[in-house]
Amino acid sequence: MSKPHILMPGGYAPAEMEILERDYTLHKLWEQPDQTAYLRQHGAKIRAIATRGDLGASKALIDQLPNLEIIACFGVGVDAIDLAACKARGIQVTNTPGVLNEDVADLALALMLGIARHIPQADAYTRAGEWPSGPYKLLARMNTKRLGLIGMGRIGQAIAKRAEGFSMPIAYHSRHARSDVAYTYFPSAAELARNCDFLVAILPGGHDTEKLVNAEVLSALGPKGYFINVARGSVVDEETLLTALEKKTIAGAALDVFWNEPNINPRFLKLENLVLHPHGGSGTVETRAAMGKLVRDNLAAHFASRPLLTPLS
Image (tube, rainbow, N blue to C red):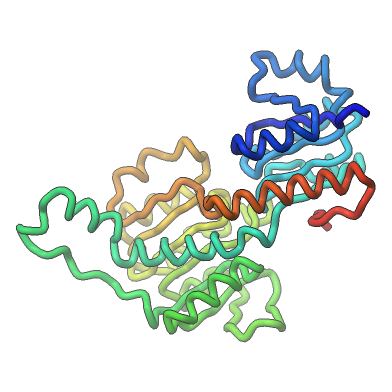
């Protein structure tokens, strides 16, 4: 019996690729010098796409695959997948929620501490031999400070749970107030920013949330407030954020995601009131293995005509 043909816009970790190659015929699009010609030759064979959150699947790609049945995304974010095109053709889409909640929440707290206590900057200060010339400057505490979460999904709740251990009052903004959490709700991101010291973005990307963190929100956060982004680069007006950091109208920022990653704006590299991280919220061995397994389990369920584990509703 022939193995189902799967298109991959980009690779996974070697261990994940080895398992996929055992069960499927893989078409590695990123290795093809002429992708259009390759898809013209092989497109009709493709029944599934195994993609990543950063790569997604465009309508142009989907349109070249007449027998496509399912797109399995390695990652939670699906804003780079043309969901409208999928819906129009009845193509199923899955992602990998749940398994990465704890690691993303861990990183959010690490970034909060990193910018509040200048951990990378103090490390560089010590390594440069500057300590004998005087102690590092005094910094802001994080414990007991007010935390504002833009987004109160599963990861937002995991961040809030950790922040409770730092005795932080917690508030949030989302489309609607939740009845299953006891935190304070604010109906707008600007109101939330006005009432917190650490503003953390943890919400989906896409058109509906693009530049939600704008000039009004950053102005409300103010010169003693910190912005942390573990969501998507698109949720913040990056030009406005850079200006706020350069003029120090906010205290600082810690960013795991960027508008044009990995080719980030060079203005970020000159800033001292900033902690940079290369989009690695789920970047642990354990979580990436769990994500890979969930991708494979969804594909296996589809081709065995069983219910999908994590379909998009």
